[in-house]
Image 1: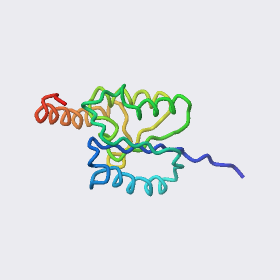
Image 2 (image 1 turned 135 degrees about the vertical axis):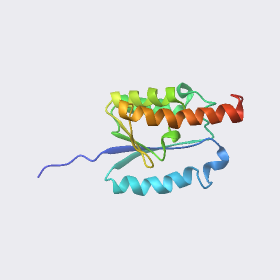
Image 3 (image 1 turned 180 degrees about the vertical axis):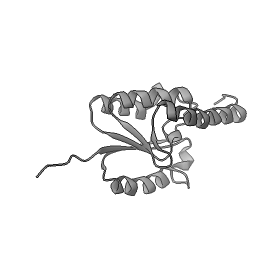
Length: 148
């Protein structure tokens, strides 16, 4: 009998506010939805990474510990799929989403959003990603003027 290797998944949950850790849209909500969903997909959850109080507009991608950990794990081929609730849980700028998705994809890692499906930087997905993240960037500018 052949042995089928299970797809290894990493779960990333992020909130911009520490107050949202247990709130309606916080870490617990993401975790409670995604853990059973990962199991339903037949994935093997090998790691859960949480970021609480990490605003993607205020903390650059290269300064986020979770991103460093994901990149290290990807290089070491420790997982096959990154699961997020929504793409904006990974990052919120067009530049950053392309950078991290390209990096992970180049190491054979798929990025799957529970709400949006697989996230890629293929031409067919770029338009949607640009609109989604452009709207996030515009909102941030209007409401915070780039200030911390």
